[in-house]
Length: 282
Length: 93
Image (cartoon, rainbow over all chains, first blue to last red; front, side):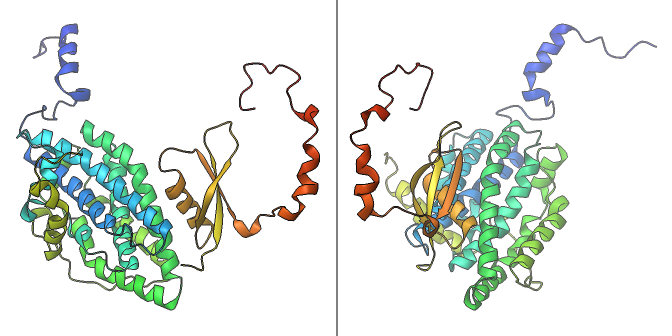
């Protein structure tokens, strides 16, 4: 029997090497329309951008000077991540929008962040609760994303996962101290967790966008680490002597642009300057 | 948070150098003192290692005794390594 394909010649290998990044033949070429990848990049980018903006609201108002710096550092890490992610989203879209255009010239309905990150800071305990729930999830996601078949996502995740490990650890430490602190700090920590808990299910939702990336090995299926996530939270809460909040009705929709009323207020502050003075420079 | 103890922070700029005192932070305990030191003093790649020590654990010399402790060294120039050549390879002296 003769083989149905001609033998591979050295020049064929050369063509193969240069045709797609890292020999990932299934990955679409740069510039090729890829709405799912664009959407996925927006989700990650908007999560980081909105949480970073939220945390930066603490600047000058935190309970202590040192905490002020801690929270500002987290915010800067996240905004740095958003710069990379939204920049890549713009390149992926190929419509001439850069990271700034995506951050400052989209309206509420076009944002793809999860609802958890847009929740108001509340008191310090609620901010820590939000950080614990998000950073724990983000860390587990990035750990897996660093093995992505998508070269950008893999490289991004490998770098960002170190920053997020610190975010997660800091949130854990504070959760334990507030929960296992005074009567008042324990009550506030429990209330903070109670407020944020209903936004967890959205983090593990799988829709067409996630599916499309999972199929090509570009993103992990979040459901695969939901048990691990719940166990990690249970461990921290046990250490903090806090009862996990009782089952709540999940609230979903952020990934489709259905946001709470809070996001509009964030955007009003965040987007005011570049919209009012479009040519402003440093 | 005014009841948080004070911690002295020491940073090692890079391998081979000693930790240097850079300042202090307030924190409720040693773990958060390290976190606060990290967030306050190593934001611009200043270090590769951190020490924090509770300020109250540092035993300091009494300024009143400065005369008897330090002045006797003033006229002993032979203790300075200025009477022989230091090879170029020797750093940080």
